[in-house]
Image (cartoon, rainbow, N blue to C red; front, top):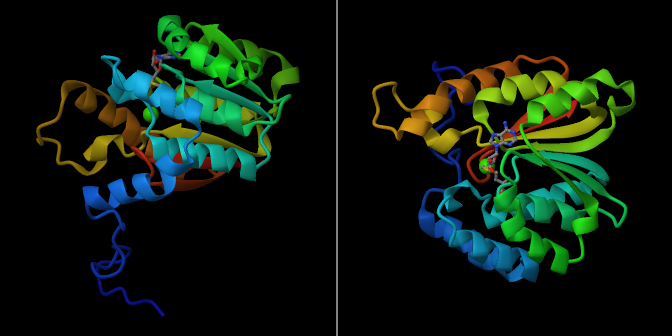
Amino acid sequence: MSVETGDQGRHQEVGHKSLLQSDALYQYILETSVYPREPEAMKELRELTAKHPWNIMTSSADEGQFLNMLLKLINAKNTMEIGVYTGYSLLATALALPEDGKILAMDINRDNYELGLPIIEKAGVAHKIDFKEGPALPVLDQMIEDAKYHGTFDFIFVDADKDNYINYHKRLIDLVKVGGVIGYDNTLWNGSVVAPPDAPMRKYVRYYRDFVLELNKALAADPRIEICMLPVGDGITLCRRLS
Ligand code: SAM
Ligand code: CA
């Protein structure tokens, strides 16, 4: 039975909020379930990345654990990652895939990838990775032109230039398998998706915010996919291709 009163569709205050009402609760998740089970290589890469000046870009440990679990649940074998940075989500992916699994990984910056690479090599999973340096869009366009790539990816993780997500989606929807999953990262964009337009925001947060808002609307309206927006990390929207 619905308990909604008037304000149709709004969540109820009591018992219906996100459980993450405090930093302490998030810390509890990390300390109870994430850090004790984090593979040694991922811990090492996380600690190395923490010393890097752009460390704000890395995926969190709980998001790494989530990706690793998701990939195993869907038996992913052929995957793609757009936006690698030092490789934390890439390593979570590589560790989840079978020995003959593949990741096409793209980033405009090879140096950051190479910072983490020795740790990925030591973990024995570097052979699964095909790293391409450069903007992802032209690579996707090339693949789109070749029918052999259509419907071939089990999982695609998009974590790069937010102003291109819609452009990526137009291509990725053909490259992912029917029943396969695309994960768009940072879809809650630092909480700014619900901030009033005049709220104080860092310049880059403000700049990309409109693109994230547009993406979220476009994904919700796309009949080719089922979606699920999860409040993990900075928000991740999973899209399962229907047809
Ligand atoms: N997935 C990474 C992780 O978990 O640590 C974080 C990726 S970081 C948020 C975004 C990355 O996207 C940066 O390393 C940046 O160089 C890359 N990037 C930006 N524009 C890009 C483009 N057009 N094509 C490919 N990569 C791009
Ligand atoms: Ca991200």
